[in-house]
Every structure is written in structure tokens, then in C-alpha cells.
Image (cartoon, rainbow, N blue to C red; front, side, top):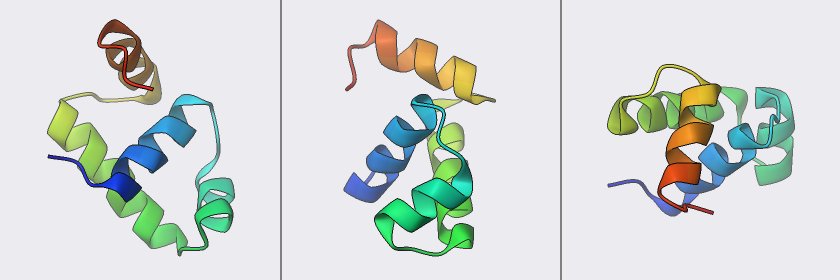
Length: 62
């Protein structure tokens, strides 16, 4: 199960945002963004942002 912050990070990565931009927008540290990104990839069994985008489009996750 993904938390709200993790879902937000995944949506921003899907839009092509860089780690630093995500961290600035959410007012969190870059390492936390890296952790959220790692959690998303591990939980959803994807390896890169392209697979994440495909998965989110297929299951209509906005």
C-alpha cells in the first residue's frame, strides 16, 4: 500500500519532474524523495519512470 506522499511523488515522476524539483515542491529533502521513489518502484514492480507511466495509464491512476 502506498501512502499519499508516495503517490504524489509517483505522479510527479510520471510528469517528468526531477528529484530536486519534487523535493522543492513538496518541501522535503532529496533523500526522502529517493526513498519514496524506491518504495514506488519496489511496490509496483517497475524499473523506470516509463514503466510507471504505462502502469498508471493502464489502471487509470491519476
